[in-house]
Image (cartoon, rainbow, N blue to C red; front, top):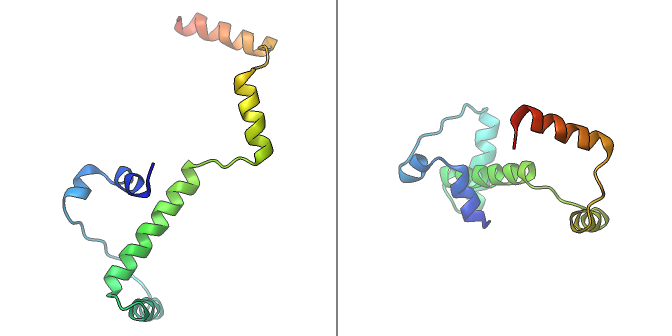
Length: 104
């Protein structure tokens, strides 16, 4: 999934179609900091804050929805999928209970 696709998937469809307002109470020091950073980039504070907030939100979502495996764990995962072990007694019992409760 591309960053744009992730961004659009994270937003409700109606929010993409029209503008919404976001308000936040910040300290005078935070406002000064944001204004200074925006000015250094030659942008409005609104433009600066929206872009940075959007990037932070996408990164947060990605961190929570993505799992990174080490090379060793990745290899073990693929090997297990390609050649799964035989089910042990507890797994067979759980499968039987499931079938009894929910059928096929």
